[in-house]
Length: 269
Image 1 (cartoon, rainbow, N blue to C red):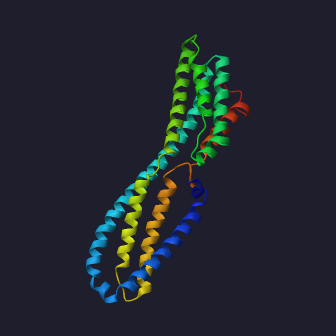
Image 2 (cartoon, helix red, strand yellow):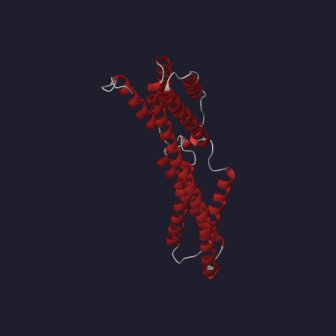
Image 3 (tube, helix red, strand yellow):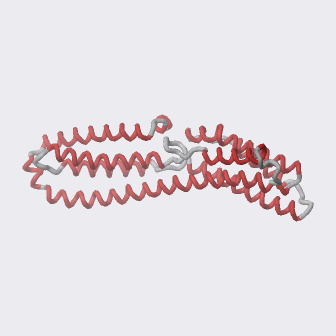
């Protein structure tokens, strides 16, 4: 699986289309040699009704799974943004904490963002994850939750920071879960069986010009294969060649660095 996902999406699509067109062409030539043109022509009308019914059923299933995969992909992107924002917000809300606690929390947030960029995303491309970020976030939670506020300001900062740390922790858990849940093997089996049935129906038609029919059948195959490749690329939001990248974390890291060392470093943030 990781080997297939290492192939650029455009190249994978071209290879899949080339193989599909070749298979469709060979299959159609074989079927038309086994049956006479007259036999196939006699059943064009009935076959047309059947392919409309079967094609519609298949289109509904394929379209539904593609929409679900697209929503899955979009949700994963929103989770990454929310997680990186929580990292920034925890860094900011720590301003109201005692000095030692604030330094510890902010150091953890910087380390967390740095780990996301340098190690977490490369591991997710392989379907893996590391426990280090969880340890970092728990260290920040321990620091924030382990002291007794001396005044209302520290109490408010404690609550706000803990809320952001919880968002950070939950966001990562959801992100990891989404990177492990794609289209099941059984769903892929149903899709491939359906695609085979639609293509086989196309072979049973007969036009007076074989090249025209071959072009029409190849067009159907191109459409189906293109959507299947799209579904394949979308099912795991962090593994494919069009996967969600660490850009949100890069922006988060740059923001914190600007707050610490840039022209905003003297602000009480």
